[in-house]
Length: 123
Image 1 (cartoon, rainbow, N blue to C red):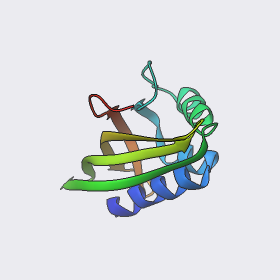
Image 2 (spheres, rainbow, N blue to C red):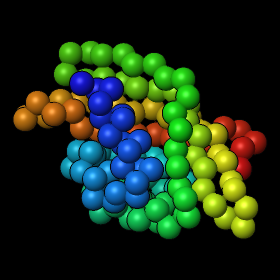
Image 3 (tube, rainbow, N blue to C red):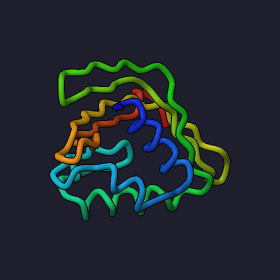
Image 4 (spheres, rainbow, N blue to C red):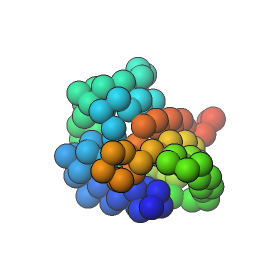
């Protein structure tokens, strides 16, 4: 189910599992990451984004409210989450997200589109 994919994404991010999180994205996925100034539209660029993100000490994400809408083989998840990490002091960055999931040929949900942005005035 689509809900399981979001939980896997959260677990991979909180555990710093680079391969695990990158594998959740389809080969033709697009990522507009929270802390990125460019759009990531291939697996190498998506991996590069998470490699840089995982350099943040004690990186963690916590999901807040969210909405799931399913449309046959696709689902859209949107809501808010908060990233935290250790800099010179603890940094917390509230953000909002939209994930688009689709069911691939093997019947597994994959991330096809992911947009995330900081809440205005945050961080």
